[in-house]
Image (tube, rainbow, N blue to C red; front, side, top):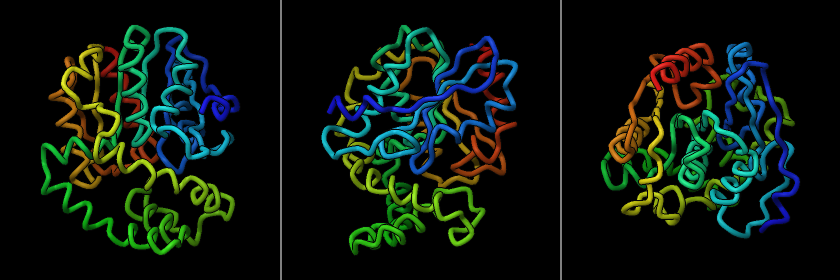
Length: 266
């Protein structure tokens, strides 16, 4: 389990005085933060890494817990107090990092965190509606059709444009490469097998936290944001009009603006 973390790839953007560590979403890579980093280039130095099975990092070998392994990879980069930002699955990794090293996290921003176990407890009917919407994805995976699974998943959670046939073949291939980690993480995301929501587990997360969502994202995401906000000691929520699940990629200017406001207040 340790060896596969040796080749984790990371990069930095910007030359600002504020250190930021960011964790990307599933099927993407560290370069997904480039747009946001360019908007804030004079304000922040943003470091990001490729999760296992993504970008230039090695493939996950199927051993160990995928979320916790990526949190361990991120913690290796967490050597000074930073503003920690995560998106989607990467937001759940960032949360685990904050739980493990709260003294090195000045603030925590979770953008569209996909910890569906929150909604399973707080809003089961909303989660059930999302699960029904996901049935074609599950059926394609059960049938062994990785390309169709990835295409349908991208249709539900991706930016909407460009459409799958219009994506460059290397990009489609990289997304298909990463796709298996998503069904493999069902227990982590839906059943909370890592006990993120267990009594007392989130007590170390006392730094200011922001839960950000896109107003056009599936309704379950707002429920998760509200649920985590209630469970964290010092948290607030923000929603971005006209944005969906991929808001830090599709709306870097709006993301930069709510980060500036949050950090100024924090």
